[in-house]
Length: 270
Length: 268
Ligand SMILES: Nc1ncnc2c1ncn2[C@@H]1O[C@H](COP(=O)(O)OP(=O)(O)OP(=O)(O)O)[C@@H](O)[C@H]1O
Ligand SMILES: [Mg+2]
Image 1: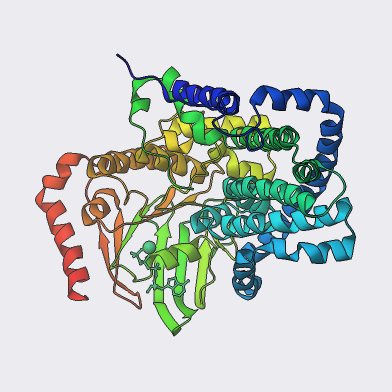
Image 2: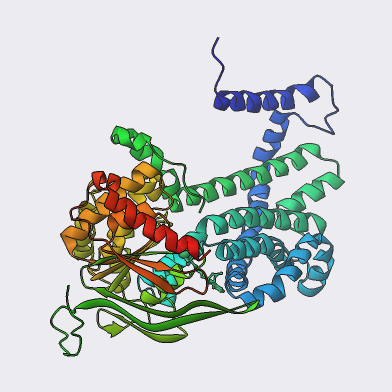
């Protein structure tokens, strides 16, 4: 018997989870209050689709602006911190320790400043997602191989050319990793803050339905958040594939070119 | 051998000396105070000659090369490349090849060779053509579409040489370009370099730790002392050209190698 591919196994596991989700409450192994059957959950998701869609739109709106803040400020400040030694020595220890603080305890302050509308969520989630973006941008720029810069200077590159043609492309992989983490944290930040204090959004739908013990509606909201996170991850992966084509190009070329290509060394760590 | 007739100011004609270093010293001001890296270096490389610099590790070879490339300013003394001072890098006068091929992994081999031309804003078609011609010169005509990680170490250095030559500089500086290669590839690359040198009539300044490589390649070997670096010997290598691998087994080759080795060892 041949071993099934990991992909097949993953799909089987996914399928099993869905089956169990349906079967466990139906068979009375767990009460429906804890886990409502999948079909029931999907049914309320469909019947309340306008409510969930409205909630999703609010959440998406907040996530969009929060990501704008997190990525924009994170990349800009990360570039300064990574590129300018004086700023780095001054700021990096501070930022790194701030990063360890559970920022969620600051959320009440954000509501005091910005109210309980979307502004406070945007501000909070923006700050929440900012740190990984900033730290990885700084790391991406600081760890650029000196040789890249030296070679570019020897070829007559000016400072703007160094930045656009060497530093940015060299830092992109690390920055993208930070964007991925920062983006995920931004989504978490928005949903969590909606759950804490708000009057709209997917997080609000989770909280409000939990207080009235309407489990299918809670789970329906969870499904929406899950789909949102998965969609975000797929989008970032697609961007990574596009911008880092050179890292994966090897397989494509090697299959079509001569045998000498087989003598390829492992890609140098960038 | 040309006399040092550099008095006539004729920018049109080819200069007798491609590289002239007079009384160059360099001091680094690092964390632990001033480090004198080079003292009173004099060296002249006539156009079209192949000069190799050897010396113990840390004696300032790389520092000297950086100054020849305009990447560093000497603390004192003057440097003329192709007859003029070189206060900042000028890839049209001096091409540089480093030990690490330092190709950009996000660019194909062809794009890497085009890089210096792109910096200058040369038109795309001209860039392509020149870069392709250079890749052909180094024997990689059909590998332009490869990314660096799809090339072997020797191929990467070939691309790096093509990149150094693409602006047509009369002078090529090479800092231990083959040090990271295995012995066989290193020999082949040395041979290839001599072929390219012969075809293009460049002036080459080449740094190495391998005495065999030094004698095999050079017209003249400059031997440097340990830090602070000085030139302690100039060994003319009068083996006939083209050089062949068989020459390595000759007495002459061995004697030259021995003479250089004695100089380096005596100073350690
Ligand atoms: N940026 C710097 N700051 C301070 N000291 C430096 C710096 N760069 C080099 N040095 C010192 O100058 C000396 C010469 O360095 P250099 O790299 O030129 O030597 P090298 O001959 O190329 O050595 P190797 O053969 O190991 O490559 C060394 O002692 C080194 O420690
Ligand atoms: Mg060196």
